[in-house]
Amino acid sequence: MINRLELHSISKRYPSVVANDGINLSVKPGEIHAVLGENGAGKSTLMKIIYGSVKPDAGKVLWNGKEVHIANPAMARELGIAMVFQHFSLFDTLTVVENIALGLPGDTKLDELARRISDTAEQYGLELEPQRHVHTLSVGECQRVEIVRALLAKPQLLILDEPTSVLTPQAVEKLFATLRKLAAEGCSILYISHKLDEIRALCDTCTVVRAGKNTGICDPREESAASLSRMMIGCEPPPIKHVLRSPGQTLLAVKNLSLKKSHPFATELSDINFELRAGEIVGIAGVSGNGQQELLAALSGEDPRAEAQMILLQGERVGHFNPAQRRERGLGFVPEERLGRGAVPDMSLADNILLSHQTGATISGGFIRKHAIVKMATDVIERFVVKAGGPHAAARSLSGGNLQKYIVGREVMRNPKVLIVAQPTWGVDVGAAAQIRAELVALRDAGCALLVISEELDELFQISDRLMVIAKGRLSPSIASSAATIDLIGQWMSGMWNDTVVTPLKEVVYA
Image 1 (cartoon, helix red, strand yellow):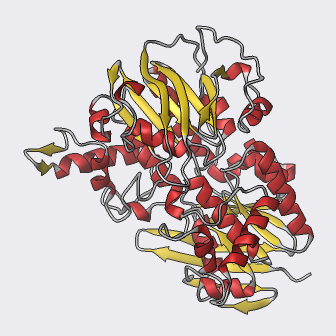
Image 2 (cartoon, helix red, strand yellow):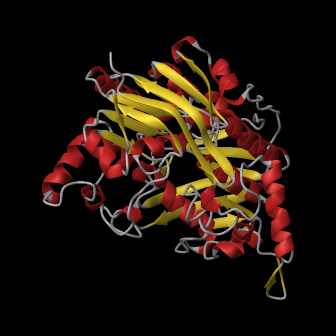
Image 3 (cartoon, one colour):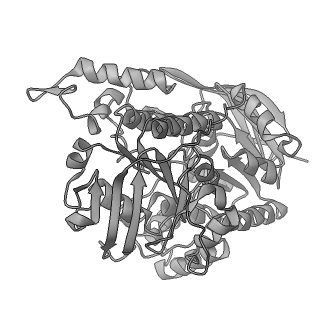
């Protein structure tokens, strides 16, 4: 059988790093093939070479047995290759249907395309509104646009980078059924995920990449999560230590928070109430687009429409305060969007320190203390093992996972009283994810109050003391993580919690 795709000795070098060093890869027709590696291992560069957006320095590519030189993504699409990038390629000021139309022939009718988008989205359980502008979408909803755009092309090879981070457990199973059906019809799938259980459940073959080189090929169905982790990072991630403790005083309280839609496609927040106490982690689960974005904006101060008394920070009414004023009072914030909100892409890592560290330590007499921000950036890089070309490297030069470690580290090292984190380990490898989660638990143990909004249910169960669910702008009651189940939280993610009897929380919670 002729392989659908073959890569022979692919190499790609950049001034400060060797991204790919003689990598070989073979994908058969109808095969679901995982590419596994830690952040910065070279996976994304390799996928971009296959898709034509990066040119290799050496090596050759064979497509259906014939050598090809994929000059650009348009040529890749003509060959039958579709890709969903981890960092999206969408125009904010265009609608969903207009964005998808950009890669199609000029005579494509938008109304007909909108119907195809809706049908495809419904078929695969990916809710989308074709007429919404992209700037109104959450990160998870943008990912749905990318997935649907790829599926519309009916590709021979589909490259998926972290495709399940926006889905409920039930929707993940539906997507897996779809991918298996596509594979049975002859479509090859390259699947990049840091969720080892997903790879073991879905994929036929797994190629492991470490530091830009092949380190092994295996059948993931015959491996354990631990053995895959050892192949990927050389060891198993350390377990997070749980410590029994009672939470302290309330540091953040949200009372009767209701906000109308800020734009036609926003989610209205309705009667949000919860308290966050010192020394606890409260997790909020939910499918992307159910009000997470609006709640984060209200809590961070980016949306100042809340009444003053609706948000209390250490007992002070801060509903009208801007983000800087809330930071001065001990609030830390990690947004879900890394490039553009968490970090300015073209600024250095040192300069990006100023996004959250505007104090006397970094600014004196109206002048930036350059040596101070370089020292802070260096400390974050070293403590969080960020793979970067030093504190002067541009934020956009980092892989997604390494940039995430830097942004989280920047906030953790401020020692906030209250830390709000959105999608802390989205697209992050198992080793880095374990480190980030351990740092969050350590902050909790030091008395910080943490609110973690994530679509990774395993993550929320692992680090949270209490769990809540947001659905259609409403917030469920809280439940002790030890008393919750995946099935229950999955049911609540559909908005069905009114008929559930919630056991009252005990004073002692777990870490």
